[in-house]
Image (cartoon, rainbow, N blue to C red; front, top):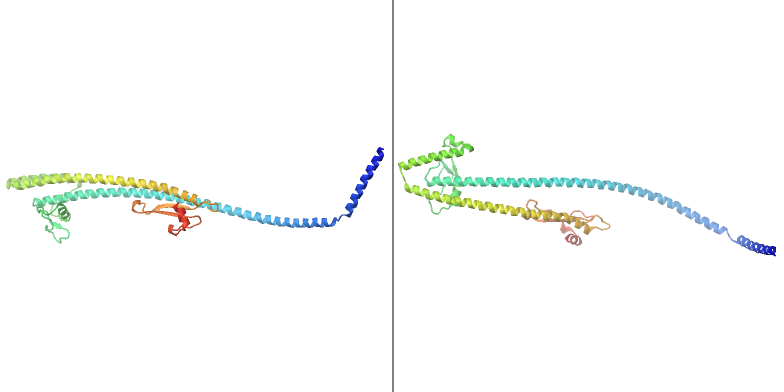
Length: 335
């Protein structure tokens, strides 16, 4: 029974294999092979094209890498040049600051020298006026523009309608000829002037005493004392006025310098921030660096005498005046 089952099973399996064999023999295997061969040829051609494209792409990639390296080198060179320019700019600013300091120092020296000259001019004018009041004939008095040696250009110190300013102006135009003086008085060293002046004063006092003894004039002495007292009062008033002028000048200069320092500090702070803000406003995916903006003073010596220039350069745009920018660019710059 077992053998019969095995034979039956074998016969059934044999029948299935024969049917499968007949089916396989009856199938058309040539067409699929041709189709497969065509696909293989197509894929081989595409592979060749891809290999060629890959070679071109690799070549372009190498060229792009070389260009990128060149651009990086140019960028480094540009950065080095920018750093060098910034260093030069710092040096120029330091030189400018030193020059301004030197100019201020020289201005102070000039002002001090001018004050000394004015003081000497006042002393000289007082001496000439005193000499006229005492009716002393000065040696060869010459008024500038008078055309000759004459005292006619000098105002009368006893006249009632001649004010002090007119007298000082007239005395300033007086030129004295010292050729008639002894040589030892015409060439007196600065260190010897005080001693010589004291000797002359002593001699004048001696002569005055001798003159008073020979021909006393009490009225002239009284007039002299009155004028001397007036001169003392006016001298005190002049010194007080000079002190007030100096105090006002020093206060003005201090306020002026403080105002300039505050303005310069604020300007430098704003100038350092405005470029950063403008870059942030103009940055984009196509222009990651953004634009440029900066402030400049029309007069760096005294900024309050002129204005402030605001310059903005949008991305990819060259330098131009603000009024030549478009409406949108002006709006971004104003923001």
